[in-house]
Length: 151
Image 1 (spheres, rainbow, N blue to C red):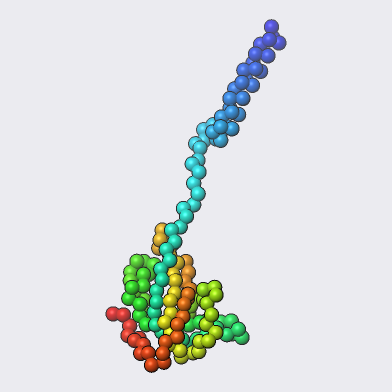
Image 2: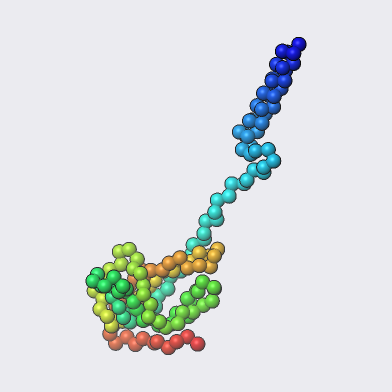
């Protein structure tokens, strides 16, 4: 009789254990814990804005001087969208990383250029992710540039 009671006790406990293990397998949670919803980090919404501006080449890359960038003193850009949503970029000397494949080997300091550059913006965080020059066209030397600051 004791042996039969012990068998029944063990069988009952094994059934309970089986149900618990089944719940772990199906639901994937421990008792008393809530199942966490699968949440992947939000994929940032990247917007690429493109701007074309005229300017004067003030510095060119130099393999002998790693600090030398491609820099252009550019005219004001009234429609430039800033991180905070405000519009406008004033006249400035600005370094421009080069997009892959952009060849500026024929440029000289003092050349007047029309420069197109792209800006990557994370819209969810209103944060600049990067920018790069994508096109440079040399303008005629007689081209008049307007370095009047924005108001």
